[in-house]
Picture 1: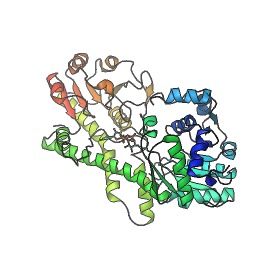
Picture 2: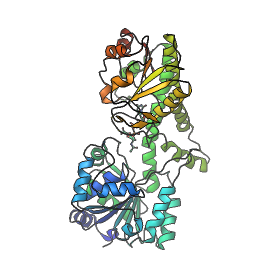
Picture 3: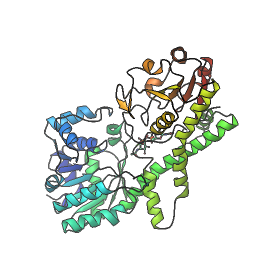
Picture 4: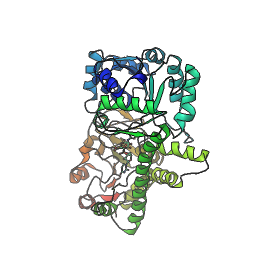
Length: 454
Ligand code: SAJ
């Protein structure tokens, strides 16, 4: 058929009538929901993953993200209906596809250099069986210019065809928030930048047909990638600014949360909050995709780089607050039992990717503390080598210090008096995510510290 030869109207119809065959490479927290939503819209979808465990799991209609509302049920329905098939063989899957969507991870290595090996491998493989007039969409986050300078040459070399002329290429960076991926896929506008007008139009029509969201067309892939990075780096820098205020206001005896909440009454203030640091697959890594491109052209984004240093320093600050609070009750980190409430990188999801709490826990253990963990998303699981407790009370019983690391909804309205009765008095409470009221914690008898609090 060749999606590149279809009009917008014909693409809309072809999706609905199941005439479009879509191959999604990478069935992670973005790829699997994307595959399921494309199947739900009518496309015949082949999901590809390099991990045989994931292929087996999804082929049986199950899903590895129980914390994504609605996803398990949708995956089961799409697999059962035969509209979503799963394989480990990208070559054969691509040979049948009109559209290939790349959703593989692009982590940074220990030297903070982006690792695009998964994208390179995926592109080398699919190029070998690429059909003429098919469309390749890169959803993975890459630095601006990577599609034009690295990915397209790989596709042309391995296919013997020309991008734009013989097949379409577009970047459509994922913009869904872990913990509400399906909701965001069906509501957040998508930015599309094609290597040429035909690619932009084809990708736009496809996403409009499948997701029904507003499409923002931009000049080219590098612009689309720049949009994605600008959004996320804006967030990382603003979180760093909140953390910088927190470190200063603690010393000045000012409550940063009180300040930010008051600032939020100004129509053009965008509240960001201090905390234990910045985790997740996006924010801690995205800045380095841009920094690397900046280094290539001799223009280093200093503010972006400094923000990363500030955010990465917050776990150490949390450890300092724990030591201070314990010292206030005549105890030391060494020999104390510390109950960590919440390890996930952000509230209400089952995800430890680059969570700042890993660094906090490891540091406290190095200093001689005994750690217990309770996280409602990790009941009974082994987290950083520690068996998480089955209940909050089990974690807190006999603790010298409670450390709140994630603002899970279950921690809203914690009964600090009941917690204090469970602790080994005199006890400390450190709140790294402004969950409890400082005044209530102190009245309950805790030596209290909070990030950014007086
Ligand atoms: N964090 C703070 N203070 C804040 C906000 C977040 O310390 O004011 C911390 C969180 O605790 C977490 C980290 O930053 O450790 C990241 O938080 P996040 O809310 O940005 O969560 P992510 O990483 O899941 O971000 C995703 C991103 N989406 C994509 O990359 C597609 C991000 O761009 C979105 O803004 C975010 O979801 C969202 O909430 O929409």
